[in-house]
Length: 337
Ligand code: SF4
Image (cartoon, helix red, strand yellow):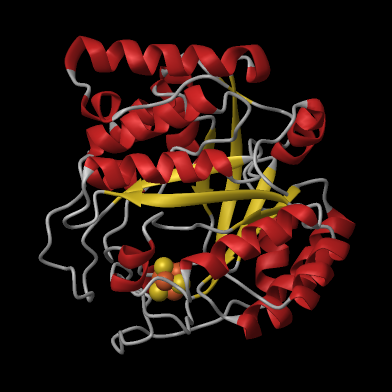
């Protein structure tokens, strides 16, 4: 601990920014070496009961074909046809408790039985019983983003439920033994640097094992479609700041970096201290209507992520994130559990 980012760090550009990113990338080496974790993501359902203003999957978007994936199709894909480099999988949905119970839970059971993959889920807030069942079935990482540390903004953007409730779920999941990863959006319309900084500070105060930062992308079919995008530079500086605050964290290079800064954003994320990359394995139909931002998505496949890793002089980990987190268990986690 010891790094307290300031708005000056978030504003850094040119040589000062390069130095910040270099320092951040170096901070991860003692724990992770040059390893980058390659996980697959499968978007299992685009049903969502929530209505976040910044997201194309919001329930008021009637232009989407809503669909849930079939257990057998995804199981076949992940057991027999997954990319060789991938050590972990994240099963992700809109806030859709039906998919969590009927598709994700049986999939976790199947994958635990048939593979050694590290198993993550990103399903929104659910009842305690289903968290327990998912954990008992073999999932170990729960991704629950807090989106914004500012309670008024959280409400303004119609983020899921209340911020306090979201944070309570994060703490409860951690207390129940989940490795929890969170995340926030940088550059929402009107968001000051002070507010962005507060996101970093909140993240560091929570009992987390990882955190993502996504640049705000104005999503089509959302009320923010005409708003300006968040700055990639600020997003990268947030990632570097998080890395310096928590050298032991898993920090993903999110694909939105590439939407915001074609083809180079992702690599710059790795250069700023990110150590997780994600291959999108969602089957075609569902991928088209899993509308976080735009229909034209920049899909990261195995070749692209491996090329980005190699180009930055890094190497794909052979160990799963879950195994690494078990190994890091001796490192104390900051924040109340
Ligand atoms: S951000 Fe998540 S919870 Fe909000 S509308 Fe999109 S999928 Fe639903």
